[in-house]
Each structure stands twice: as C-alpha cells, then as structure tokens.
Image 1 (cartoon, rainbow over the protein chains, first blue to last red):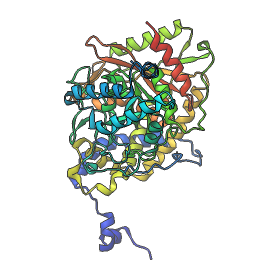
Image 2 (image 1 turned 180 degrees about the horizontal axis):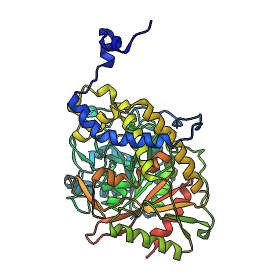
Image 3 (image 1 turned 90 degrees about the horizontal axis):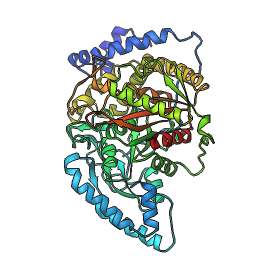
Image 4 (image 1 turned 90 degrees about the vertical axis):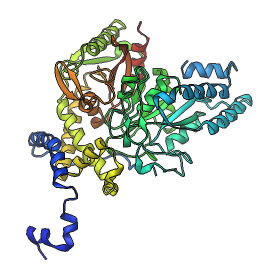
Length: 68
Length: 440
C-alpha cells in the first residue's frame, strides 16, 4: 500500500516517528549553527566526481563496545 | 623524572614501587583539590598493586618498562569495579564489571593505576569545564582551561601526579590538552589501539593514545597499548632521510604570533639537525574540518539517541551539539563520508612527497575558563572551533599525529607543535619528536 506524504504525517501510527522531538525553538537554535555548515558540505558535494568511488563510506575497522 | 629514569631507579632499588606510588599519591592529595585532574583516586588498590610489583621485582620477575610505574586512565575507559563516569550524569554510578583491553594491557605490563582522570562531559568538548564533576584547571594557570576532552590526563601528567595517562581523541582531545598543559600527546593511527570498552563518541573518528612527560615515554606507552603481533613501520635509519613538510597555507594563518614563531623556530632547528624541511601546499583543511564536524555531529547524536528524553542530564554545550546532530540529514552524513575519502586521497598524494607535516597544535595558548571567543589576527573566533581547527581534520584522515611542547608564551603558558605522519608510521613521528625535544 502506498501512502501520500500527507497521510504519513497525519497517520496516528506514524506520527510518533515523524513528529519532531525537538521544539521549534530548539530546532531554530540548532539550525543557526548547522545550516551554514551543511551548506558548505553541499557545495563540496557538488565538486565530487559523478562517478565517485563506489565503496563510498569510510567504515571503522571494528565496532567498539560501549563502556558500560 | 620520566618513565625510563623511574624504571632505572626501581631496578637499582633506589626506590620501591610502593614509594614511587606514594610519591604520586602525595602529589595528587596536594594538587587535586585545586586542579580536579582526578575524578576518582584508587589509593588503596594502587598501594596493594605496588607492593605486589615490588615483590615480583625482588623475586626476579620484571614485566618491562612500565613495571611499577604509576598511571591513570581517562574516566571513559572501563575499569573493573572502579566507577567510570564518562564525565556524564548519565553514567554517574556506572561501575564496569570488566576492564577495557587497554587497561588489561597496561596492567599486564606492570603499570599501577592510581585512578581515573577527569574529562569534558562525554568527551564532547575541549574545555574540560564539567558541569557535573567540576571544572578541571590548567596547572600552569588555574584560571585557564587545561584543554580537552582529556583535560584531567593533561593536568595529571604535567604536575607529576602520574607518569602516563590515557586519553581519547575524536577531534583533538589528546593533542589539545597536551598543547595547553605542556606535555606530549600521541594520537595513533585510527584503529591501531583497541577501542573496546571505551565510551564511544564518533565511531569513525575515535582514537586512543597516551599523554606523557617525554617523547620516549610516549613510545613506551604506545608499545604497551598494542597487541603483541602489531608491527609498526620502522623509523628511518637516519634523520637526513626524513622530509618535513611545512605548510604554506592554512596552518600558520589565524595563529597567534607567539605560537607561529615558536613552531617555525622548531622547524629551523630540525633543519639544523639535518632534517630536510620543504614548504608544501596542503589540501583544503576548511573542507576537512567541515567534514569532521558533520560526521561527528551525526555519529555522536546516534550514540546518545537512547538518552534524548533526559535533556536535563546534559550540560548546555553538549546538549546543543546533540540537538544539531539530530538534524543532520543522512544524505549529508553520507556525502561527508564521500568527501572524506576524496580528501584522504589528496593527503596520501601529499605524503608521497614528504614524511610528515609540522604545524602548530593549537592556534593559541590556553584560553581562560569561560572564555567564549579568542582573537586570532584581529578576528574573533569561537573558542571551540578555533582550538580544534588545526587538529580536527587529522581525525577525519585517521593519520597519526603527535603534540610536543615547543616553548612558552610571554605569560609562561606552553605552546605545542604538531607532527602528522602516514598511517602506521608512529615510529617516524616519535624519532623526529625526540630530535625536536632535545634541541637547546
């Protein structure tokens, strides 16, 4: 079954997933710092060759365990 | 006294392991109330361990260069039965049931653990001004930060509380306190030292390494931290074969005059010692730093997602970073990793013409506690971003880097230089650092 974006947002079942957990004030505060950074990353992304390395993600050699 | 000298004193019976441990415990008792370098002191178990090691030496069992040497672990490294807080309210009562492998290795080498050193909350910051466990202070000037996140480790080593303290480095957290406190800090190649049992921050950026008083001690500590079958590339047989790249761009811009002069004097000294120094143009470090910030924001927020509902348990600066990380789209995280790969290739190309880069570690000496901005060439910059701008990118690359004291400011504050090498060439960095350390 396919849902429209509107249905997903309005669906009670999915609302827990899609509802922002931060308040609008908290989001606005975070975005003041984050948006310029993401803008620069997107500018850098445009410079990547179109056929950039297919093994694209730098993975750690092992998975550390939490200290607890 | 350094680890080598202490080892000689122990083996010649001029001092016992217990006496050495007691000397360090006395130093902690004297200075820690003012500096807060230690969050936990394990005095009783340390003295029992030291007596056991004395007994071993008397019976001909010598575990090696760390036998009887007092050390400390950063308080996000799991220590069996000893509280491990990660500097966070979340883990205030966390008592691990097992030791992290790095703790096991150093204990097997005969090191005596005196306790757990303080850190910036969750290792997510550079001031070590911890809202839950108190402010850690710089021993050179208690009104100033020791750097972070391994601030307690830097302060403890600088004041002879211990000979060696472990640190972690996700965006400069070993090298920054080394620079601000005037000690040696080594961030080894990514993955070289086992990160198991250590509270993660940025899974693809976290590194573990030592802070020590001397370069030789850092070499001893690194050897003790490695798995037995690890083979590092040997250092060149002659210093004339070492090629230092001195950056023409980025690293000496927006740096205080005193720092610039001290590091350039060290480069000139290296030349006088026969090391070849050549000017080089480095790849885009601003881009490298942006990549590091995006990756860390996303990885750290992923790590602490289970605790997002406990907002009141985080300090304001850490909470702000976690909020930012929650808003990083997956597309930007993945593209940051792709740019990372491209920049690593560019750095590998640069390192085909040189053996290491020589740069300042931090653009300034230690800022004051609570100082929000620093002035660099007349431009005001956020203290955290300014302090990490010369070190953060190296975590993105995963290359080894070492911070070494190279002088003092007019105010008597330490200045650090940074040596950056190719992966698994820590021995070359250590050999070169010993040359620079020995200069008059």
